[in-house]
Image (tube, rainbow, N blue to C red; front, side, top):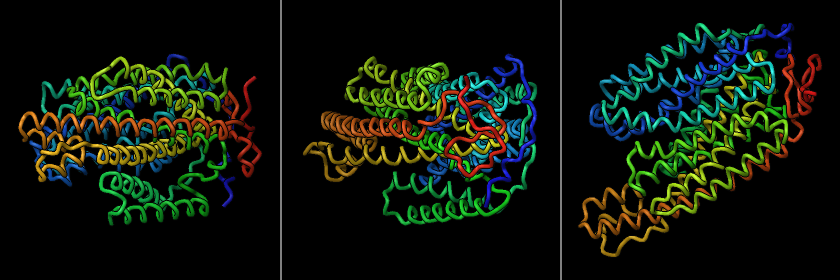
Length: 539
């Protein structure tokens, strides 16, 4: 199928917005992104309380935790394209209402089934909001430098929101019941809805195509199948039957989806976008960056609480500097692009991140928080810079009419990268733990398996032992965990360096400033129609 059907656009000068309205648009998007980011991490703190309240089975607990992510990842592409066609502001407002309503249902869920359904609805609502925020920014900011700064702020605030989740969750759970961590979303989304209705401009594809209903289930099955297979492989191993089935479903559905997009006249996503080096290179760099970045949240959540013995609130506060440095990196990216160029800045950012991951390995089983901050600063700063550049490049390398679709593809790659990172790094951590834990000889045979399994199981088992033996078991598990954490962190450092090297090649021809053309085309898009002006470096 030729992709020319996607390149016929209604020409005309772009709408100019006042500076106040443009930055107010960023603020509205940031508010919604913070709520979504906080919700991702707050659930983990609420699980002990909801377990005693709604009494879910072990399998239901897993679905309560995963339903949100599965629905979110599976629907991002569909919702991104839907926003391009029906209006991004309209979809954003629908999403804020739906997210508030689903949060209310989650907070007052009366049984496990209701809770799983509510978490699924939260994921559906989140999928309508996430691609809409960046695509609206893409349409409001026509100045390339301002657009990059706006993307940097949005991504930095998202990173800060992930760090704020445990803090807000810990504060609320210290005084209220588990549902309070979800109930707080309701007034925040109400504010986002009112502010969005007043401030956000509407934008959509001026020549929308009919939504291909066959492509929707194929995209959902492809993404969810792959993400589910990765998550299950991480928790139970590759040899499980359900992993093989999920992987088969994901690969077959994804293959059928891509094949269908190439053959029909109204594709859900235009696969010709992937012929653009700027677009594909940035997507791959983002995926690899998330692959490495997930180590910080995955490992430190356990390290702070299980090794150092900190409370969830203290652990959340300890991670906040990372969010602040990530936001600073995002803001600094815009002026640095004009100095270093996009490829080199991504490479520098990922090198800084690799240095930070390596510095983390100086930490041990005893607390040395200043040393952790020393690693957190370059790691978060570098990631903030790199992901701002790649995120901005993804948005700027496609026409504004397709901004929602491009943003959704980027978010989906990010979700997949995070899932792959958790699977690989979690597996490395567990494997090293099991081979290095030095179980005391006098541990009963009935408890030895638990001690060798994980630090959490070891601490639980140690609680039922005599004090001296329990203390030795805890010390052995802490030392083994730190050893595994160091290996996982060094793996993350290697992945970050690989992402930086890849960016030097994949983004080397992308100009420093991407001019906002009607239908930008880079040198890698050889088959695209030549009616539109190519991306050019601003002079």
